[in-house]
Image 1 (cartoon, helix red, strand yellow):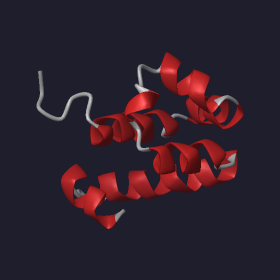
Image 2 (image 1 turned 60 degrees about the vertical axis):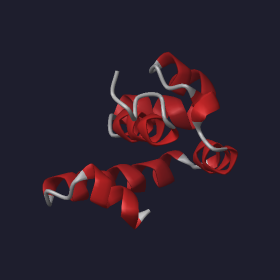
Image 3 (image 1 turned 90 degrees about the vertical axis):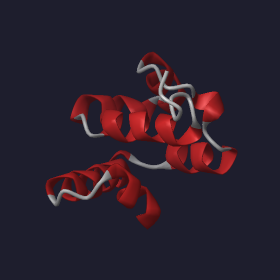
Image 4 (image 1 turned 90 degrees about the horizontal axis):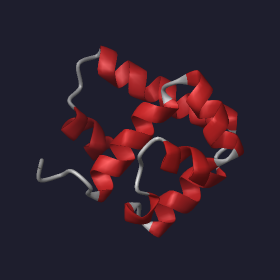
Length: 86
């Protein structure tokens, strides 16, 4: 098992990957907890403040996050460095 597997940061990364998919993003905007759980994300491992913020975002706001993630990926920014930005 990876040392970060199941950690809050690994669950946040799974969530970021999930909202990169337009269909998943729409479902998450409508039913965040159900969609995240169905995607294998342990929402109980997300810090309360992070969970609350992400679950309150609109479909459009989630799209902005997905665009930022995509641009960081395309620029070759490592996940570790990207995590430091946020």
